[in-house]
Image (cartoon, rainbow, N blue to C red; front, side):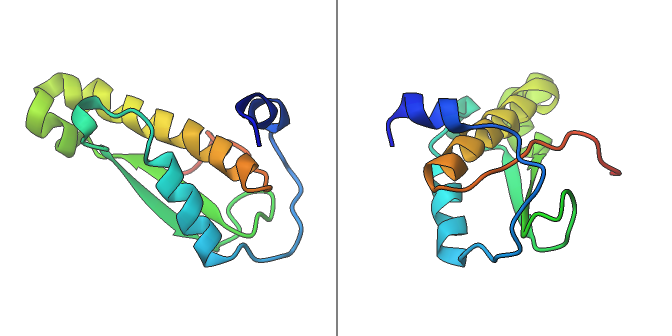
Length: 114
């Protein structure tokens, strides 16, 4: 799929089919998203995959968390308070595009209980 098509096809899906996503496809989209820019190439985020029904009955969810300590190890407080958050955010954006390229859909969920 061409990049323009991927971007045009991406939208927030709020109803999902009750089908499983193959684990190899999950690994593939995560590996592709890891090509996102990252401060110092530290990839200061963590990715968790859960099959719990977190939102909209999606068959799985990616939980992306900044890893402030990893970024702080090189960049100090700025890495901790900014770069790690940027790394996690851009990874998430790339992940959503990789999901579309794989023929699937996603939705960004920003409201959650920590």
